[in-house]
Length: 443
Image 1 (cartoon, one colour):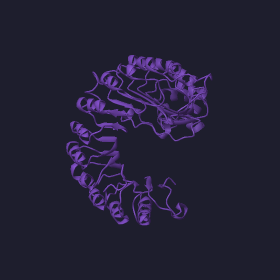
Image 2 (cartoon, helix red, strand yellow):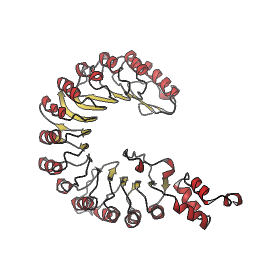
Image 3 (spheres, helix red, strand yellow):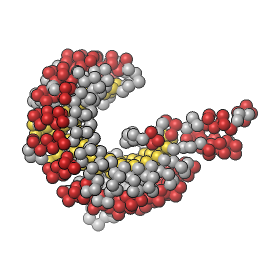
Image 4 (cartoon, helix red, strand yellow):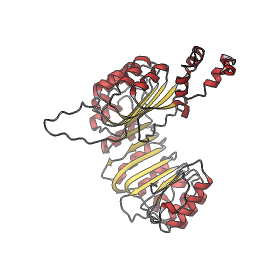
């Protein structure tokens, strides 16, 4: 202690900057001098895990000020302690909360609402409970014109049924709460509502004109809702995700949101294949993820890729895609990094011809084509040519053993990277001597 005490406050401050949040809190009790130094150090981000036993992925924020490092994370057993941590760091710009249950979350939300007025990014993820309007009211005082990102995520959405006459739990927050959020945050750029809410188009029509990212994977918007949401907001929105859309909603999006970089609609309810040609309006599209109803869109996909040459991710499900379009994807969209084709029909016409062509995609990281009828040799050739490929789903492939050996060698040579392989292969995983950074069929 004596030797440390001889160090100047400037040197101590530089040393303490590298300490974790937990260490900073503990060191404050050592002496008043250390407390004074520690309180001068800016803490912009905190990630709090409260008795959370599930791994919950955070949304990737592109703003460097909002990104957390290992030293910014702290695991806590109860919300009272978490509230004390928040009160110690009132100038936080980004708060990430992962909690198993919302039971007794009120002290933490109250602490945020009372002392944190500099928040730009707020993200809460949970497993059990309801995020009610009352809980939102505790949080809202912290939000103001500085707020940019609001992210709400329920990791396991549940369908709950209650017997007649039973006491039902409070409903999750709804339109009044979301309207209050919009009024307090006129510069909001990102809204993610991925969980049980009572929010509808009646609340979302008050979206601020600053919104750029709108991810609503758990909210259904009817024709009138989509019109109200897009009115005044369509031109600046760059990312949108909806749980489902019909032809009218899809047309509104493709014709009005011309700056879109990301479009995700897992259930696109259209009857004619040519309707997807509306996507050719979206010249800036980088991420396309849509689910169709068994439609063959080979010819249309060629025209889409020709117009959307900036595509990095292509995810198509419940469709019918063959070599006709997939074998020229590398020519039309040379920047593709992720390709996921989940065909409606098992005999879909994706063969080694497509695999050979895709090997020209030097940035390919993920390839999921579980119904494709391809050989182990073509997949091994692909692995040898696409050095960044680390996620592979080829469940319809023959000679799987050769693929297993090839990806084991790849994983051993790249120990800092995680690999994931899915295929029909019954050989016991424990006998493969696979490295720890490789998962095969979830093991």
